[in-house]
Length: 260
Ligand code: COA
Image (cartoon, rainbow, N blue to C red; front, side, top):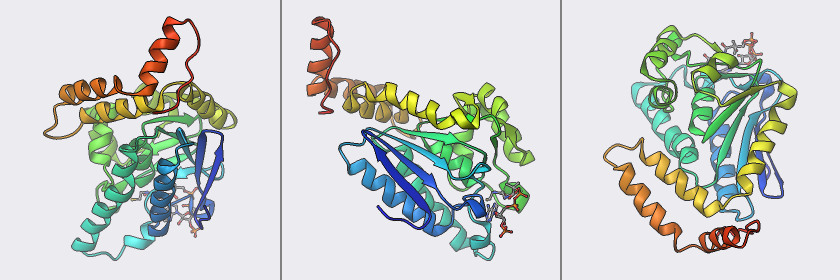
């Protein structure tokens, strides 16, 4: 896969996407959003890929937001189309991928950058990372799911404060608030992401995909997550991985999952 704004690599069952516009602090312009969609779509269809890490290039930023220069002149309709299309092809797309996605936040994750990290299934950060939704300082609000996902992760009061003040929080504060799961040094960030991904890779990928659907159902309007869980739980009993996992346990050996 050859892209202008992102790098994609694969190592065994683990893929890595690096947003690669360091001179613009990896800001998400339209082309980058489209490339990210294509890359995630291709990795999701690749049966060999069982987990994806996304990070930013350089030492300064994960993503410093949507590219302000691209939407500064937009009309009301263009603004809502920007948010709708972005949510559809990238942010909701990532949140609903069957393949687990870990955000490795290596610096600024602001606006659309934090929204992208929040769309991932979970996040880890380097100790220099700074996170925030500064949109109201530009006269706009978060439009890529930030008003929905931030309260889900940190609670309504903390989210309201972060959005209203447009301020940035430290990696440590983000960890204490539940926004990121782990904080480490910048050097150790990708090794830690790979170590966690390694633990994921040992498990049944078909069961993990079912778990993503069930957990996400908790946050969907008009969907009963308990019912979704019952259906997904039952479906697991028809998989080869379930037979292998339970048989391996009973035979006191490690399972060898096929992902089917
Ligand atoms: N959109 C477009 N360009 C951006 C950008 C964004 N969201 N964030 C950074 N850039 C660009 C800058 O314009 C600058 O480009 P230039 O060198 O061509 O002038 C380059 O990236 C480096 O950024 P700079 O502001 O010089 O770095 P800094 O270290 O002084 O400040 C930030 C870092 C993150 C505090 C600052 O870049 C910033 O506030 N960015 C915007 C954050 C934001 O509001 N995001 C939400 C958008 S909805």
